[in-house]
Image 1 (cartoon, rainbow, N blue to C red):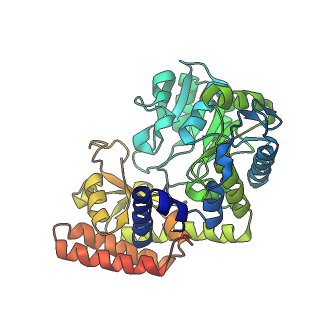
Image 2 (image 1 turned 60 degrees about the horizontal axis):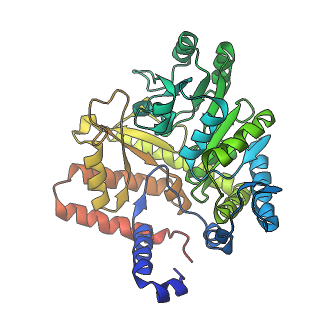
Image 3 (image 1 turned 90 degrees about the vertical axis):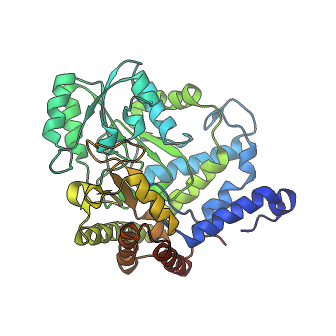
Length: 414
């Protein structure tokens, strides 16, 4: 860490950042929504672009002095269009949920009906959960995964859509490990006259690498965060058909937010440039390989996985047959230097605070250069830790071994 000015001016903040950097270096990140950005992205984030206000769009700002900022945003837009084949792009959304809120605002009115996947079946809070703005402002009807297969049953989705006649159908999830049939969702939406909205926040990097199908050519509007598998800064973007460009742009500003974070826009542009490189496709392929190996190793050890496996970067372990809750497992694994996130399973009988599952993902570990061999070792550590959760001695030994391996696969810091 080379924040010399910060070290001199504010030692308290510097020390906290240094401790977090040490934690990231020495511990293993298996949270599916997290990743490590490159030094180039970090450098772009820490620039004077943060000083500039830029409400509006390129060439149409409400403040003067934005000619150079316009160049940064234009570059980010051009690169994202190339990656996904999008007709129109807005790179200003500050995060995933605000981007989704802008989509609803652009296409719908409060109280309109939307079809979205239930949270405990793999959906996202902003896809209609009652505690979220989406569930409070809009009339969400929730579809589910099949209770036997753990997969989305498109026939059931069609039946529900024809019955409810929503104005929008949302597809794209935060804890669903299988490929999504975008074309079939589009057919169903056309049959009932609904808009199509894809939230690819989790799988965008895999779609960008052409390893999973791309909804952009089929759907009316698509959002994604720019961290996670895209390996960029924390933020979001919206892609849509050209005919909806004004609706989306106005929903972002002035509808949802004021000035964009220009330093983050620059970092997005850098990350998109990295996505367009040959190395990124190699990286994305390894993400999926690692995820599949993790899943297979867990199955060999008698663990259950929602849907039985994975096609992407994540999966949800059902821990019911291991007699441990998801939060309890999360705490135990944190003691050995492994970060995971608790997760509900479909129709979970337990509370969301200590649900029956944990979600596991491979983007961050893959960024470090870990491959199949390391994945097998990781499963052994997790299994040993959960089986010996009352043994401080065993947990301490696992923590040492985790740290040793992590230091052999450094994160980008210098």
